[in-house]
Image (cartoon, rainbow, N blue to C red; front, side, top):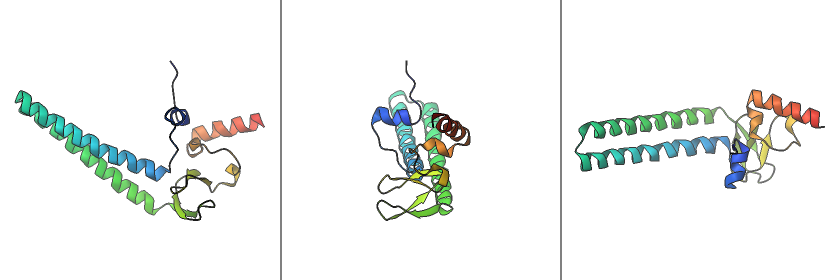
Length: 143
């Protein structure tokens, strides 16, 4: 069976890559919805099985997921204040950029502040040190 990792997964679902901050916010929002679903499942178990233990357990897990999403949103907000704002050359709007390579949150234009990455195909792995070294070695060997 074929494994899909990183950008291969994006190709599988034919989704456009988005900026790092938007992806983190999406995960935080998804965590809130998962927490609500877990709490509703707990209420359903309590209603059908009259089990206070299951109800309490699901309520506790849902509450912890809500707290986790709160911490994620707080962390994203703190991270967002320390980002570099750049003007996108394509749409001429300002966007926040994390790491060496990111995408404009308005028009999905690949952006980089690293001169060594200019002109290269966009890959989110340039933000990971280990994967970045491997990509740069492949580019050197390929050229």
